[in-house]
Image (cartoon, rainbow, N blue to C red; front, side):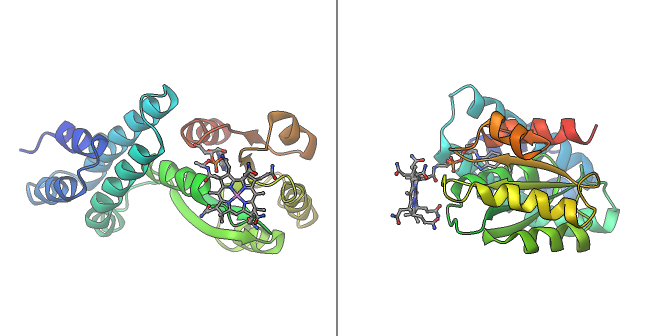
Length: 210
Ligand code: B1M
C-alpha cells in the first residue's frame, strides 16, 4: 500500500512526476480518492503554506509544489467527481480591472485549490460586472480580489458596491489582498477579510465560511 505521507513529501519537494505516479498507484490499490486528496495532496500543500509563512519557503518553491499538486490533481479530479467528494467551498478570484499583475493572485488560487476548494480563476483585468456575474451564475461562496496598483485599488470598492447593488453583499463573502492593500482599506470599503499572503488567505477564507 502506498503511504500517503510519501505523496505529501514528494509534493513538498516539488516532484511532480513522482506525485502523479504515487497518486495513480494509490488509486489502483483502491484507496479512496478523497483520502488521497486530504491525506496526500492537501496535507502536503498545508505544510507548504506553513513553510511559506515561516519564511522557510519562497515563491519559487511554492510554485514548484503547486505544479506537483496540479499533476496529482489531474489524475485525481475525474475520480473525485465520480465519487462525489465534497469540496471545502466555492471560491472565485481575479485581479481587478486595469491591473494585469497575476503572480500573487495565482498563488492564492493554487493555495485555495490545495486546501480543497473549487476555484474559479477569473484572470486579470476583471471588471466589477464580471465579478458580479461570476457570483450570480457560478454559486460562489467567497470572492477574492487582488490589486497591485494604488490606481486600481478603487476597483475593489466598485466591485463591493456592485455586489451590494445586486443584492449579493450578504450572500457572498469577500476577501482582498495585494501589496498596496491594507486591513484599514478592507474595513473602509466593507470587504469581509484582508490577507497579507496566499497561505493566510486560506485560513481567512475558512474562517469566513465557519
Ligand atoms: Co508592476 N508594479 N507594473 N509589473 N510590478 C509593481 C506592483 C510596483 C510596486 C513596482 C514599483 O514601482 N516599485 C508598481 C506599483 C506602484 C503602485 O501602484 N503602488 C508597479 C507598476 C507601477 C507597474 C506598471 C504601471 C509599470 C508601467 O507600465 N509603467 C505596469 C502596470 C500594468 C498593469 O497592471 N496595468 C506594471 C507591469 C508589470 C509587469 C507586467 C511587467 C509585471 C507583472 C507580471 C505578472 O504579474 N504576470 C510586473 C511586476 C512583476 C511587478 C513587481 C516587480 C512584482 C509583483 C509580483 O508579482 N510580486 C512589483 C514590485 C514588487 O512588488 N516588488 C510591481 C510577487 C507576488 C507573489 O506578490 O502580487 O504582492 P504579490 O502577492 C502577494 C501578496 O500581495 C498577497 O499574496 C502574495 C504572497 O503570498 N496577495 C493576496 C496578492 N493578491 C492577493 C489576494 C488575496 C490575498 C492575498 O485575496 C484575494
